Amino acid sequence: MSSKISLLIIAIFIYGCASSDKPPVKTVADKKADLYYSHGTQMLVDKDYTSALMHLQNAYKFRADDTKILNNLGMAYYFKKDIESAIKYLKMAIDEDGNNSDARNNLASIYVNQKRYAEAMEQYQKIQKNLIYKHQYRTHYNIALIHKLRGNTDAAVANLQKSVQIREDYCPAFYQLGMIATKQRRFRKSIDFFKKSTLGSCVNNPAPHYQQALSLLELNLQEQAFLKLKEVIEQFPASRYSILATRKLRAVQVEQLRSQNRKMSDRRSIKNTQQNNKETKVSF
Image 1 (tube, one colour):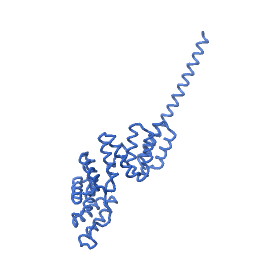
Image 2 (cartoon, rainbow, N blue to C red; image 1 turned 120 degrees about the vertical axis):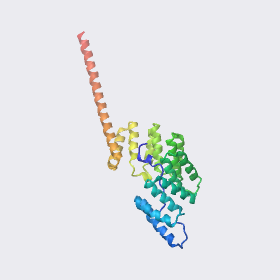
Image 3 (tube, rainbow, N blue to C red; image 1 turned 45 degrees about the vertical axis):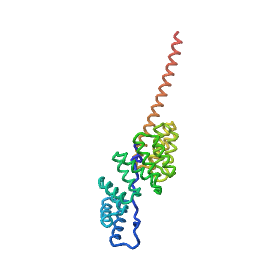
Image 4 (tube, rainbow, N blue to C red; image 1 turned 30 degrees about the vertical axis):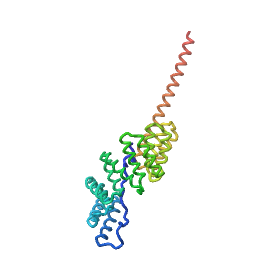
């Protein structure tokens, strides 16, 4: 799909600033590693990727075997568009801790972006074996997107359904289900999915609202569609969906006007024909 949500193939996992699992008595090196790690992670959250990379590189110098530092350092390189280094440090994080499923998710994300789907799927399958991993709903979602990219709709739907079974408010999965239902022209079902995809973390995302309007138009529920398009324009004025909604609204209104003009023209034509027939009969 062409919406923003479709591009969020995999969520990027960054470890928070809590101290690492080291004993309470720390060496000077550990204290410095914690400090640089904390600052670097906060810079990642703040999207100051240059500063994040600098701090996390320093953290790595003091504690090179810390899987959390390695994960976040890999993501700092990723956001600085050094993909080769990102893969290197994510693999190191996994080597240090085979149960670091967040690092596997990040590595798989990069593989998906590189269209290395088989390698990405291998990572996801390993994540699924981690029975204590708390984000398996994301794993199913990501697997679903790979199936969707490969054209395997049934497998995509099955994994999306598993995703929302694990987490009922996982809006990206509902959005994808809505897009698949739209493609299958099951518009009433797609509306239901799009409504659910406006919940949770997607509450401020205009895409599901816009897609609802398109489905309503397909069902010829124009009044409801117009209200939804106006809602997108008013609530999300700075988004590209506001522009799309404005264009769609104008296009539908123009088509309505043309349709009315055609009907009026047809009525006039019929009336003229009837009048001519009457005149012809009189002439005889």
